[in-house]
Length: 380
Image (cartoon, rainbow, N blue to C red; front, side, top):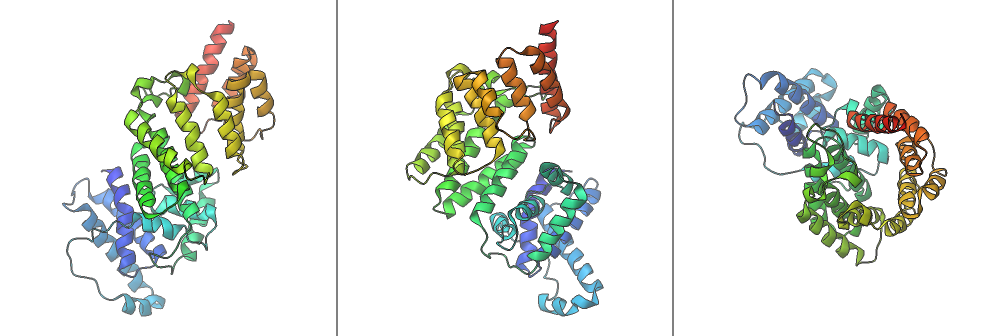
């Protein structure tokens, strides 16, 4: 069973049903049922045309449900009879689905959750983990969102900023886990850049390219994380870096600075350093200051504090970190790093161990545990 292929096909199959007049919520449910059937059938009977198979099964699931509810019979007459079998439509509606899920009637949080489920192919559990909420809560949120846009047609205007935010979340899900999601997010952002005259969309593309360029160096062969300062920079994809810098410079040249452009500028400064100790941390702190003009994100403040620690010394970094909400993700890990940099190894070891216990994923947990063990061995 090719889970990657299933995830890639999901938005286009939903798009086919929407084009046939099915409302979004029903289409998404029908496709989910078809995916479940695919997991049961395909291992023994792989189809020659996976998309056509999914469209056929999803359409039949829709009709079965439709016919089973008397209250929906009037809509059944409007939708019409099952179309003749044949090759599935080839149109790529993925980006249109992003805009549908970013409909102005939805809150940004609901729009992001719905898109990650319907288009990003993430499970409700994965989305709940990303938002740090119980799975039933996220399931209810997604159901409400589907009902809200039940009658919205494909092609209806959505919110560009929400689409950008969702694309970046999907990219990050791939960046920290499955590479295909990151590549898909880059592909769709390229499309979005070609469709819009928006510097922030260009900034988003540059940010993705610059981060994606470092992927080959981010993990060791055994899957463990490699911190940025320890990465083998010869493994970085210089073609992607060059493209990202060109896209970023063009966006910055239009003098309409935004959040994604500022983040991309930070990433570009990291990419520009041949060695970790050549990183221009003073400029990076300056870009974080620019970034704080657009967002009150505690994560940005935390990253700025680490950058201040590199630019002005550990004491300054710890002072900046003291202004950040202690509940911010990775706050303890940042504190551990800065305490180690300040020479307070016992505190650093204790904080690394604490950070490991609350790490959001296994790779980070292993990395932080090793840091605690390394310092512990130095203290013995």
